[in-house]
Each structure stands twice: as C-alpha cells, then as structure tokens.
Amino acid sequence: MLYLINNIDVLTEGGKDIAFANYTPTWKLHRKIAGKALRQYLAGNHLEKVLHDSMNKCLPLMAKEKGAFNPENYIDLMVFNILNAVCFGESVELDDPEFVNFMKMDKDATEMVGKGFVEDMFPIMYKIWTTNKYRTVIKMFDEIISLVKRKFQEHDKTFNSDNIRDFTDSLILARKEAEQEENEEMLSQLSDTHLRQTILDIFSAGIDTSRITLYFAVRYMAGLPEIQSKVQEEIDRVVGKDRLPGIKDREKLSYTEATLHEAMRLGTAAPVGVPHSTLCDTKVGGYDVPKDTMVMINHWALHHDPNYWKDVEKFDPTRFLDENGKLGMKPESWLPFSAGRRVCLGETVAKPELHLIFATIMQRFKITLPEGTDPELKLGGSGGVTMPATYEVIITDRIKT
Ligand code: HEM
Image (cartoon, rainbow, N blue to C red; front, side, top):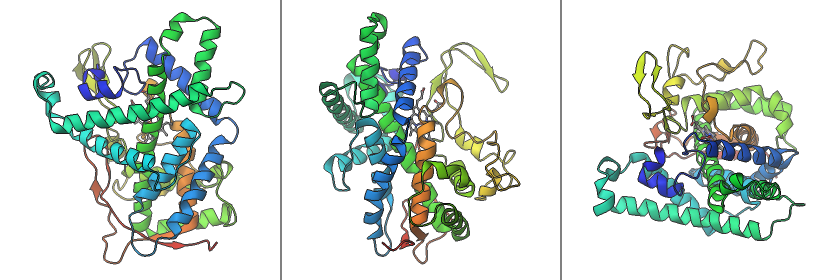
C-alpha cells in the first residue's frame, strides 16, 4: 500500500525494501535474512570495535572546539561511521564529500518528506506537473540509491566467502547459499535491487534515528547538570578514565542507560514510527478500522501520557530503575522501537550503539550551555521526526590526553 505513495515508491524501487514493504512472504524472507545477517555480523566483538574506531576518530576532533558550537556534525560522523562500517566496512573523515553530501541529502529529504507533497493530495499532478520540491527529493533519492548500488557492486565483485567483511557480504552470502540450494523461488526475491534496498534500510534507518536520539541526549545533559554529574560519577566508577566504555560495561551502567531511556522517552525520535496498513477489518480501542486503512502508532503520545508517567514532562531517569538502582522492567508505555512483527529490526544494534556513544561522550566531556541559554529544551523537526531545535554547547575535556 505505502509504496503507492510516489516518493516512497521511488526510494524503495517499487516496495522492494523492508521498512515500507507490505506484510507478504517476500517481506518475511527479507526480514529473516537481514536479521540473520545482522546477528552473524554482530557475533564476536565487531560492534564494539567499530564503535571504538568511530569514537577514537571523532572525540579528538570534538575536543578541539573552543567556545560554543553545534555538536550535530560530530554526532553525525560518529553514527555515520558506525553504520558505514557495519554495512560497508568503511570509515570516512569529517570533511569527506561522501559523508557531507549524504548527510545533507538525508536531512533535507527527511524534512521535505515529513512535511508531505501537494502531489500526494492531488495525485493527478504526478502525470501533468510535479513541484520543484518533489523533483528535488526524487533526485536526492536517486543519488542515495546510486551510492548504495555502487558499494553493493564493489562488494559483489570482491566477495570471498572465507572473509565476510560486513553486513553487505553477509547478504551476498545468503544469496550464494540460495544459489547452492538451487532455490529458484528464493533467488527471485534476492535480486540486486532487493539486496541493496535491505542495505539502504539498515544504513538510513540506523543513521537517522540514532543521530536524533543523540542530539536529544546531549541537549538534555547540557541543560541538566545534576543528572549529567550522576552519569559521569557512574562511568568514572565503573569504567574509569583510562579506557573507553565497552559492551560488557553496559549492564553495570544502569543510571547511564536509564538516562538514555528517559531521553528516548521525552525526545521520541520516530514519533509516529512507520505507517502500516490493516490486513483485515478490525477494531482498535473500540473503533472500527476497515481493511486497507493506513494506521500509525503514536509513540510520542505513549511516551507523554500522564496516565502512565508521573510528572510526565520531568526528566527523571530513576523511573527506569528499581529500588536497588538497577535497570527495572521496561515500562509498558515505553516503546521507542515499536513492538510486534514490525518491531525495529535494528534494536539489537541501536541499544548498545547508543549506549556506548552516549557513555563515551559523557566520559570525555563536561557539557554546558552557553551563558544566557534557556536550559529548557525546545523542539524542532517536522513531520515524521522530532528533534531538539538547533542548539550550541560548550565542552570541557574531562580527560586530558
Ligand atoms: C534510536 C534508534 C532507533 C529507533 C528509535 C528506531 C525505531 C524504529 C521504529 C519506531 C520502527 C518502526 C516499527 C514499526 O513499523 O512499527 C523501526 C523500524 C525499523 N528499524 Fe529502527 N530504530 C532505531 C535504530 C535502528 C537501527 C540502528 C537500525 C539498523 C541497524 C534500524 C533498522 C530498522 C528497520 C530495518 C526497520 C523496519 C522493520 C520492519 O518493517 O520490519 N533501526 N525502527
């Protein structure tokens, strides 16, 4: 259904991705293969290595900032390099044109798509005249698809089953296995287009949500010095200052994790998730919803419902902790990754990734707001995403190198 919206149809090359695809046997196959490829790739300490490489590149650059600055670029680079390494085994510099260009297109497209197109309300326009805005987005989508296509082809040419370098190789391996089994039906659903769409899903879904979550977390910490100090006390006690936090530290960093959970609650990066469509006539909350209706989960409302959260607007990490200060049961109304069959496929990557990036930033820098800035976070963003309004911070290096 969704890929009938024209711009999504272009981005997904006719609904061949996972996130926007209909619930069909093909979607099930892609989700299964992508999940397996991610698990294969994450086995061992791959993710920690990729994270540490990215942070080691970015933190010294950030440490050079004197005075007030917008941390977006650095956060973008941290997240981009992690997903770039997971998907393509590559890492770039802050001024790399591929990084700069991708982030610009990604942000512009997210904003434009979020605000919607006149063409979607008057579909006849697609046939007779399209707006400049629509043509700009389509051009960006073409460029993003070409980038992934090029990387996929390079991987396919140099593939070696004894050396699986990244997620892209894992997907190519899945196709080779189907070839060996002579499973024609499966192979028809594993075309180059399908595989590059799966890669694009992981790459772009991972970058956008993670970067926005971190914009929120850093901004909240800058405005909440007491909570920031508690996070730093915990990190200093558990990890110290001589090494970067690792995956194994996570279970001992309960307050840090709870702080991130609270940032994800108040600053829900994907406020209405991904639109879906009902497969049959159904009833939700007493309302009749006919088959083929577009439905969305309002994650923002779940996270801001005063019936479920005490002092709903207060930033309070302790709501996620038990009486021993350990991470307690996940509250029912906390659903940033959604739930059910379409639950975020990247949750197992995102949780340790966000935790380690956040813990590493907190370990390294004391973050404050420039004098005169209102500590209260103001919202920005539009349409499909929420984010803090553009802000500046001042950092003090807690670890002199
Ligand atoms: C802060 C981090 C993240 C948040 C808050 C988040 C949230 C979400 C949400 C709300 C959905 C829609 C679920 C639904 O349709 O009901 C989703 C889907 C998805 N996410 Fe994430 N995500 C995050 C990170 C990631 C990462 C790092 C990856 C990739 C490694 C990823 C890959 C995907 C994919 C492929 C889907 C589509 C799943 C499907 O339709 O079957 N996400 N995510």
